[in-house]
Each structure stands twice: as structure tokens, then as C-alpha cells.
Length: 419
Image (cartoon, rainbow, N blue to C red):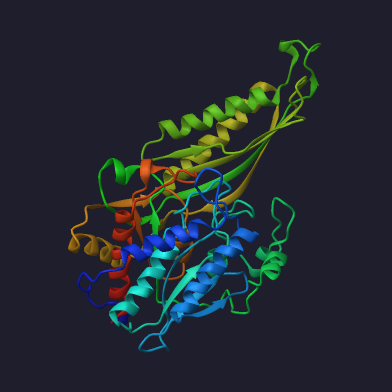
């Protein structure tokens, strides 16, 4: 951290909690889901409408807008020394197909409220500030996730992201052009002094422990795989059970084995099979091929590596026992990522000063902050969400929870940007 980022924490200045909640509810009207949530898949018309609304709010507040080559959107507030690299806040506005009103959205709009509150208090920070809407965090329509922040962090190239094809056949670069978000700002040469992101926890720990703030110390590692099991298609009637090579039966045993790896590995291990496709998808044909996805997660790299080894060994063995063949390909690898200890301590100090109950926590989900942490000092602020439920239309937070998270973000931003 540079000396200019080492100013002390400010006093407990307030944000406008009613304005923050109103802003969240107005954004929730854009791309409403069928059950009270939101559906703004990346670079759809609904996502454009959400970005347009955010842009209008920023223009009305007097912030300068820019867009980079892969559609990341930036709102800039000038600092006392505009030659310094900006302190950046952000998250995303795109959602899952049946997403909630707060996943990602809270981080963007809490950041907007911080900027507005600085205006209210007449505060100009030493560093300039930027608020970012990252392109395609969710990875639902276009995969993999976190494309925009990944390009900025050097994980992906600009061209490979522009050439990505959506599930509906659209090319990402063409969708940027269609919506007018094909910016000219460089996505690979982006100076930042630090990055801060507020987010709902997306899990139950804070609520179960009755903690108001999660001090995020880092993110657990993730490894995604694609598995294809090949058996033998045959007629479901004339083929005796003992003479079958049923790819679905073999895959079902594999899914159970993957589940057991997650259940028996200590230290918050998670294993998930999220997609399973059976071919030829006929009622009276023995399945000849099954494709499924595997998601392995753990906060410790060595343990995650052991989980991967166990997964590969068991899948291979189960395929051989069934007389089937199996192919395993790695789709995505997301290493365990610690956050900057100075910024993390500022989150903790703010929660303490404001009297908020808090605990250190490791993020179980991937976030844009995890990619940006490869580039600059980074920290995250978590708030609880009802029932720990996210990626679901019933996802919910309270106005008080939103206020507390934005207040901590406000404190850490001021301490980091100088004032």
C-alpha cells in the first residue's frame, strides 16, 4: 500500500439509507422475474436497461462515465489530486435467469450511495474515485463468469471475450455493439489504487451467528470440470439388465461419489453437480452418453488439490466398473485468493467503531473482487441475506442490513482514498 492510502479511519458519517433502499427498489423494477426477483442476463435488453438506469443516475449526480473494450462501465468522481490512480468500488448488475434483487446489485448501488453521500457531506477525497459495473459476472448467458473483471486482471484477452458465444448463439462483441456498450477505453491498462466491493453473503453463516457484517479475508479456490460418460445405447425392452452398459447409471454413481467427497472433506468443502444432460433423451432407449458438470471448492489449496485427485480417481474407477468410458476436462480454475490485510483491517475497524457485530469470513462464491485482487489491494464487505439464499428469486435483505453494509463501505473508502 502506498503512503497516500494510509490515512486513518474517519468518524461515523452517515449515508442516506432511505435513498439507498429506494435506488435498490427502482433497479429491481428493471427485468423483473416471475417470482419477485430479477432476470437481467448479461448483455440482454434487460441488462442494457439496468445499465442505462445506472448511467442516468450517475450523469444526474455529475459523475463522468466511460466504457472499456469489453463493456465494463465506470463512473468517475474527481479527487483533489486527479493524477493519482482511482480508488475503485463496484460489482455487477447482471443476474441469474431466476436471480434475486441484491446479488451484485447491492455492491453497485451501495457504491453509488457512497458517492452521493460524499456529495451530501461536501467531501472531496484525495484520490479520484471510480464506481464500476463489471460485464458478465454471473456467467449464465455467456460462460465462464467474471469476464469483464477477468480481462482487467489479465486472466482473459480482450479478443477471446469479444468472441465468446452465448447459449442463445449471440456473439458477445456483437451484443456490445448492439447495446452501445462497446467502449474505447483500454480494458488492460487500468490504473487502480485499491478496489472495494460490498456484497450479500450468499450463504447462511452471518444470519445463523447473528452477525451484522462479514469481514471477508479472502475467497476459497474453485475448480470446474466437464465430464462425459459414454456407455452403449440399446432398446429398453429387449436388452437384459445384466447385459447393459447404461451411461446414466454409471453417472449417477459418480454424482453420489462427488457428493461424498464434499461431505467427508473437512474445512468447508463443497462439491456440486449442476448440469446433467442425458443422450439420446428417449423414454425407451438405454442412455448411451451423459454429460455433467462438477464444481469443487475449498479455502485451502492443498485440500482442493486432494479433492480433485479423489474426484478423478473415483470417476475413472466407477467408469471402468460399469464398462463405460469417461473423459474429464478442466473448464475453469479459480485459485484461493487472500485479500489485502490493511484493507481487511479497515473493514473490521469500521464495523467495530460503528458497533456492528461482525466476524471474519471466507467467501464461498466467486466475485469480481477475487480477480481484481490479483492486480491491486482488495477487500470485500459482506452483509447477511435472508436464509442464506441467493441465486434465487426469494433472495432478500432488509433496509437496515443494506444501510450497515454501505456505511462500512463508506468508512473504508474514505480511509483508503484520503480526505
